[in-house]
View 1 (cartoon, rainbow, N blue to C red):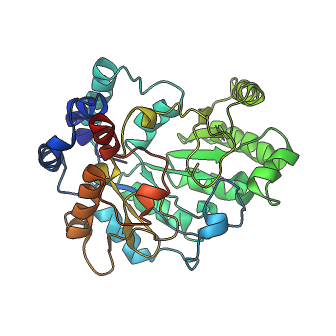
View 2 (cartoon, rainbow, N blue to C red; view 1 turned 90 degrees about the vertical axis):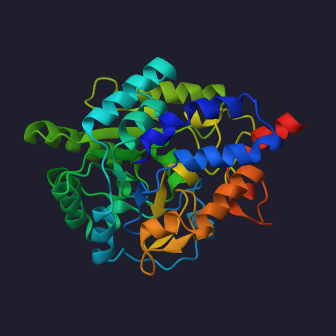
Length: 363
C-alpha cells in the first residue's frame, strides 16, 4: 500500500512541477512543501517474504544481477512489520477514490493497470519482492497473520511455481488478491520469456481450476491474469487483445501491464508507458517504503540487489529509518539531481525523477 493522503494532498504541487511552473530556483520551496505533506509514520508498500526463485525471466534483473543469499524473512521480523502497519480505513479509501475521479479523472474501478494500482495496490500489503511467494514455505502462516490483523494482501506469482493445493490454502488463509504473470499465449513463447520451467498449458489449467475452487468454496480472492507489454508492435497489440478476450467471460480481473526494468531488458526503445507513472515523477521516497527479506529497508520495488539500503529493521525501528538521514538525503537527491556516480535511481531506473522536470524548465 502507499500513502493515499500524500498522493492526494501533493497533487496540486505535482501538477505545477510536471507542468514546469517551477525551476531550480524553487528547490527549497519544493523540498519544504513535500516534507510538510509527508507522513512521518511510514507506510509499508511491500514486504519481501522470500527471494527464492526458480524462474529465469528475461525482464527481471534478478536473473543476471542478484547476488543476495536466498532466504526467508524471519517470522518475528515479519510480524513486527505487520504490527507497524497503519491501514487505510474504508471512509478514507472511498474519499480517495472519489477525489481521483473528480480531480484526477482516474477511475479506480477501471479494469486496467491504473485501476489495479488505485484500487488494489492502494489498500493491500504486497507480499512479493524478488522471489516467488509460493516458494515461501511459511506463506500460509504469514497470510493468516495478516488476516488476524485485517490487513488486505496481494502478491504476484508465476503459475509454474504454484500448486493448486497451495493456492487454495492461500485463498482460505485470507489472501485478498492473487495475480498470475502470463506473458505469452503458447508454451514456446512463454519459455523464451520466463524460462524452461514455465509451462503455458499447465498454468492455464491451474488457473481454471482455481477459478472453479473459488466459486465452489465462496472465496473472495480477486484473481488477476496479467500480461506485460514487452513490445509495442502491431503483433503485440493483437496478442494483448487476444489475451484479454481469452479471459473476458471468466471471473477475473485481466489487464495488460506496462514494463518495468526497461533499463535491463529492452525490445523497443519507443515503447510508450501507458500507466499513471508516465505522467509524473517518482514519489516512492515520500509515499512508502519496502522491507526486504534480510530486513533491509529500500525505497521501492526495483532494488533487487540491495543497491540502495536506507537502514535495517533488525538494527533500527522503521520509523527512525523513514525519518532518518539516509532517507532525507535520498529525497533531496530526487529534488536536486545531485546523485553520486553510479546511483541506481539516476542510472538504472525507468521512472522520471522530480529534478528532471525542473532541469528541463531551466534548459
